[in-house]
Image: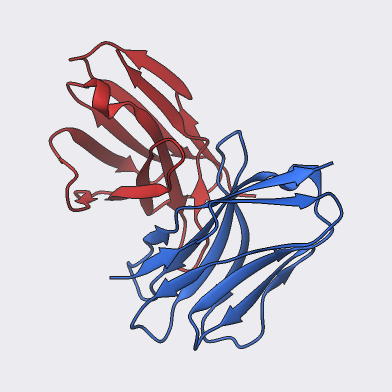
Length: 115
Length: 116
């Protein structure tokens, strides 16, 4: 079946640095990818929708200059957390779909810890 | 805006027994999709079952079935013959229809424990 690979699975960084998270669709072309954030014991909150070849659409309250999204190809979207702070520590999950009527496939997530 | 409510933060079931997880939602749309996702300790989100609102027949996937009550805006998940591997967080999710609208709205989740 369709697989979405997310890398890294865990990352620890110092406050003020930037971290890049990759989301790849391994066996299908993903026209749209989604980035979610999940706090402990809470649900997934959509951060942004990433469309190949165009600017991402951010949800209300999500800082686009802090969470940079690039969807440069049909198989790769990246989320860069810039100038990370401890409050950015969270679990980030990407998902992708190949067609509008296909189900979402999720990556394994990235646990970000900012010290 | 659509909202999804899961009123049971935690549930437990004896192995081989049946359990039902509740989900209600609020929407003004007549056509939409509903999903149940499972998130085990590995944190991988796994699609369990999906239901199209225009279909009256309840979706079924092996031991998993739903009770979709459109008028009541209720979408419960029944797990039969529960297995240890069913222990996980379960999220109910809503999706609007239409081109370009594939955002999922998730409920807060229900943590299911399976007792051996």
